Image (cartoon, rainbow, N blue to C red; front, side, top):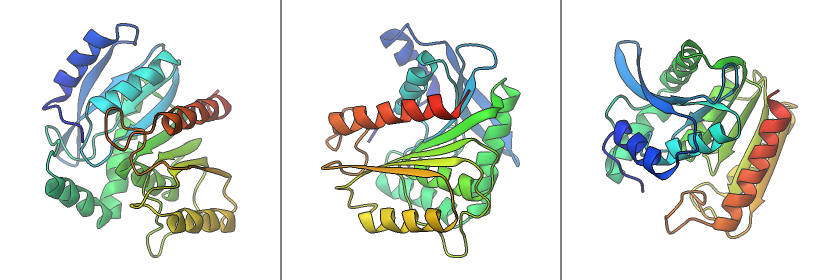
Length: 248
C-alpha cells in the first residue's frame, strides 16, 4: 500500500506539497520500555483533539496527510504508532504478523492506545475534548478503545474491522460511534456491519452507520486501485460534520 522509510521523510514531503497546513512534528515516546514514534500537529492552543490510528502498514504519509487536513479544519491531531519506532512494514506477511499479535493481545492494544492518548495530553492536546478515528486495522483498534470505556466523546472508523471479540461488548462505551463502510468490502462484510449494529443497539450506544455502494475495503486510500473518490469525499464530509457536532 503506502511506503516511506521514516516519519521524518513523510513530513518533509508534505512540507513541500502543502504549505497551508499547520506545522507538525514527529514525537518519540515510550510505553512500558518500548519506543514509539507518533506525529502531532495543532493549529492553535486548546484546539479540539483527534486521536488518529493507522492501518496495518503503520504510521505513514497517508495518516500525516489526513492529520494536515484536520489541522486545516482547526483540530489538533495526534497520530498514534502501535508498532514501534521505525517499524513500518512493507510486506503483507509482516503486516499480518504485527496486527495479529495485537488482535491476540487486546490488553496490550488498549495499553498502547491509552499511552498514546496520554502522550497527546503531554504535547498539549485537549484530551477532555477529543475523539478517536481509525482506518482499516486502525478502525478495529478504535472500536477496542471504545469498548474499553475510554473517556472520549466519539469513535469513528473508515473501512475498519467491525467484529466484536468473544467476551466483549459495548457496555462501557462512553462516546458516540460513527461507522463509515463500503458495501463492496469483502474483507469486512455486511454481515459484520449488521452484527455491530445489533450489538450497539443492544447496548443502547448512540451510533450512526453508513455504507457506500460499490466501495471496497480501503476506499479512502489515495492513489490505490481500491480508492473510490465519491465514497471518500462523501465519508469525509460526514466525518467533518460529526467533528463539528461532537467536539466543541
